[in-house]
Image (cartoon, rainbow over all chains, first blue to last red; front, side, top):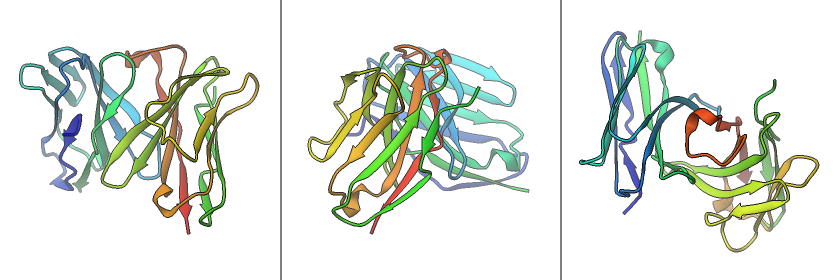
Length: 109
Length: 117
């Protein structure tokens, strides 16, 4: 079983839609949960992170962590064409990072 | 303040040749991490280095792969006798210190795309 599972998509939505991206994990030791955005031919860039369970909001982005279900989500409101990228979840118990495979998102104008 | 610099951006090698990938961390960062990204598999941790020390190489294949981070100069990921299965994007990240907390500045470079023909 993989440490982190993420649906690769691809996901295609119209501009203005709400996007929901999800990951599940198996390691109870994970404490920090992150979402990275990766544009084509670029390195991942940190979008949001949360510590332990709960919600965190930053502009149009909301990250949720449910440690009891080992499930994390990223919501994008009012999606824009510039949000088109691959979104990777990542998590760590405190040292090595474990990444999901990434979900490819296309926002159609 | 330049970000994490990786070169070359693209590297083509024939089977059996050696590949050398370079990573210059951000200024002030003394910790370097190498990841490999294969299609359909996501980013996989390979090795974590500090200056002149390998801290964790648990993700590194046992044969043909090595990494170093000398006192002076960039970190080098070296792949000997490359095979087609080594074709992937190799990313380097750096941080100012040991961290599992992302806002300490775990920054990725743009990667080196290795193609073995």
